[in-house]
Image (cartoon, rainbow, N blue to C red; front, side, top):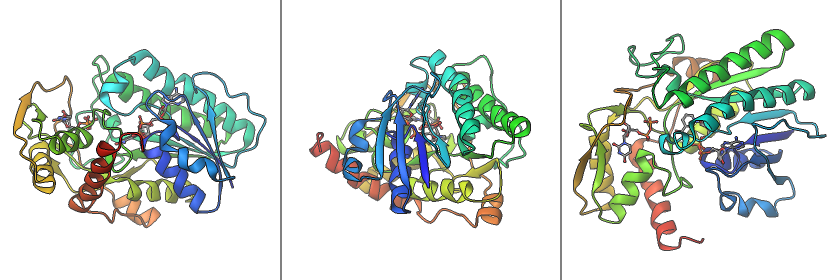
Length: 314
Ligand code: NAD
Ligand code: UDP
């Protein structure tokens, strides 16, 4: 199949491009390189079935090519990045998603939207099932991302009902792994880079807030299974193991044999207190569940950062 991956030069996107190429597909990676890096896909360029297309999805796609599948991953995912230019972020998940949906409609392509656990906001239901409607502050600094992704889900359903566009909605929970940017600002990359440099580990708030971390190869397999299933979703894709940020910091200090101490910093506004996916639906419908436990995934990620810190231009 011929597949378009928007945001393909980002963290999850480059792993997805690799997976799709291994499955024997032709892949076009479309990206505006806001948080994505050319280096993330540089080694793929020798593959004749792979191409990079610089484009910002907030502009219409004027492409005279047919695609069978579109994975829409374009959108900065780290709070640091999506809050840098909040208007651009919400444009990406609204105007950008309309542009991609119009293109999918023209192509008759099936489109998967990378939605997020953030649509549940600071959840009052725990763990979160797909039927939970969420608790998002529409006025806060996270809303440009959370509300944008909620509108994106709405747009997919409306294009599906109105124009019969085949859609898939994946609600992705916190994902980590090799090829995360060291300056990405998310917790796993921050803690690992700090630990490897024996610098203080920055815990925001008390560190008692929880997250559930999914290793990237598990996530990518889940995205593919959903795309090729007969189910529209939304479907939660995440690892149900739940950890406090203090537990995460302690694990990383131990695994890196670091001398780092913990430093407490202010908790960002609207930071969710808890998050854990209920993946009953993914297990039942996609036959999917994560295989990589946190310690194993962290070890692989630490090994990646050890190499990339030593050799930043590799
Ligand atoms: P990332 O920031 O590494 O990748 C996002 C990619 O999209 C980058 O390559 C960036 O340059 C590109 N991009 C941003 N705006 C664009 C635009 N307007 N036009 C074209 N390209 C644009 O983030 P990621 O972690 O790889 O996340 C990928 C997707 O998965 C995002 O949509 C994100 O919301 C979603 N998601 C990620 C996580 C996670 O934990 N990583 C969790 C939930 C959802
Ligand atoms: N966090 C932290 N220290 C950091 C970065 C993040 O304690 O250096 C916390 C953050 O406040 C949040 C959790 O880790 O409670 C996950 O943050 P991240 O930005 O990775 O993801 P999100 O908040 O979007 O789930």
